[in-house]
Image (cartoon, rainbow, N blue to C red; front, side, top):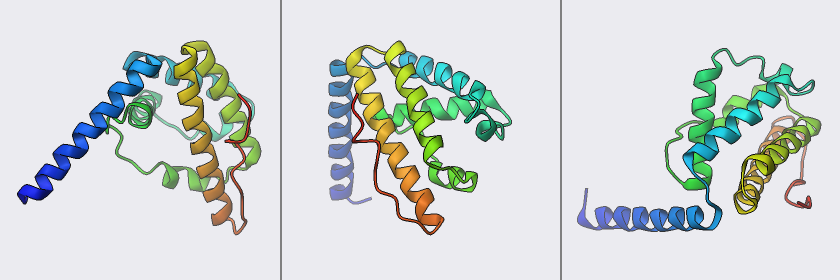
Length: 155
């Protein structure tokens, strides 16, 4: 690796660490909070009449929850722990708007219960962006066009 490339990577890591520290200071998010949010939220998802059947394909929930905790840690704290392709995993599920709306309703409710307001706001913003991204990709694969709907929702 060249010295220039090494220096660029180190600078990027420093910037990422500063952003992470800023997010932690502004929101109070911790790995334990992420774990509680993910565990409680997916417990509700599994019991939900609309979403439960979609998630019934998960065979090992302990493994899946660990992966989801890594995903959310990477999303909100930029930990880099998640290495996967969530879009690829969700495409075969033929999800529609009602699924995304219900997923967000449950997520937002759980985030507000588990997290202090600044942390809940960050999680909710990220979740809405993810829902829009997944919904638009699902529509595209089905030959439809979908516009982002969830970022426009009021908190």
